[in-house]
Amino acid sequence: MAGEKPDVLLVGARKPVLLNGLEPKVNLHDYLGAKDKDAFVASVADKIRAIAIAYTANKVDAAFMQKFPKLEQISSFGVGYDHIDAKWAGENGIIVTNTPEVLNEEVADTALGLLLCTVREFPQADRYLRAGKWVSAQYPLAKATLRNRTVGIVGMGRIGKAIAKRLDAFGVPVVYHSRNPQSVEYQYYPKLIDMARDVDTLMVIVPGGASTKNLINAEILKALGPQGIVINMARGSVIDEPALIEALKNRTIYSAGLDVFVKEPEVPKELMEMDHVVLFPHLGSSTEVTRAAMDQLVVDNILAWAAGKAPLTPVPETPYPPKR
Ligand code: NAP
Ligand code: 8YV
Image (cartoon, rainbow, N blue to C red; front, side, top):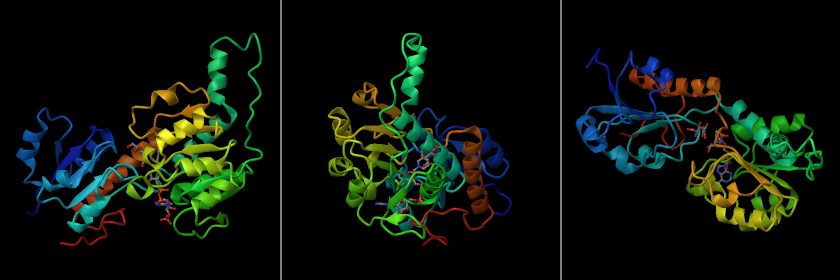
């Protein structure tokens, strides 16, 4: 009805950018704050027409979407949307939007930070100093260096390209693998195993989900070899975690830098106990300015929908206009 505010479910934290942007234009219903989730959903299900997802940890499967018969759009925080069954959404006339581009540079910065920390052992050196050991002896010289490495980027997409640009500036040769070649100057490997054999460093930045599950497996780690370093900025599911732990334990690869884990925020004890890996708590995009830009894009996609306009950033599985 003209003039009436549409009803939108907010799944996740009541972040200021979301509340300030959405509350004037839509009726927000707070899923996280509800004590009895089933009773709450039953009380609002018939009127909810859009969902704003404030954090990628919230799983949105077909069963969840089916609870809302009038659902038209899901506006999700984060560029990765493996937490949403986007294929089912597309087949059922629901548009899914994500937050691409606004985080490219931030995540690429983190990727380089994690790479440097892993190769040069900066967190270990910090721990050494704080433990008071420097007064007795210098921190040992790093055995690894970026100087003679070639980085194979797994996933030369938006963020992969921003990482490659930084590696260019560092004077580090880059090659890449993805399913399709990109119009970039770097050498393309159609087969990941061939790239793993030729390089000593893998920078993983593909989407999560079924098509990339365990892409980095025991065979790839073996091909990478004893000087091998794996940096995972993608999703925990992309690496066969037990195979990685085994390779690190047996030193059949040199080290790993991980921003993401299979069951995060839980991290395997074996990894926690290894001093030759660097572990980040999924902080690729986590600065105030970039997270606010991502929140704003969640808002802008909802506001576009509320105004009857096309979504700003629909995912490929749910093209606009939707099938209805
Ligand atoms: P994008 O632009 O869509 O790039 C993804 C790249 O991966 C493309 O080059 C794609 O090329 C390739 N790819 C997709 N499926 C593949 C497969 N099965 N095998 C090999 N390559 C494959 O995405 P983006 O914006 O760069 O983001 C990439 C991912 O990074 C996100 O989906 C998210 O999971 C992760 N991420 C993590 C953080 C963090 O905080 N750690 C932050 C942001 C994003 P083809 O289609 O040609 O294969
Ligand atoms: C998110 C990310 O901040 O955008 C993504 O895909 O992984 C990060 O930028 C993280 O998923 C928290 O929701």
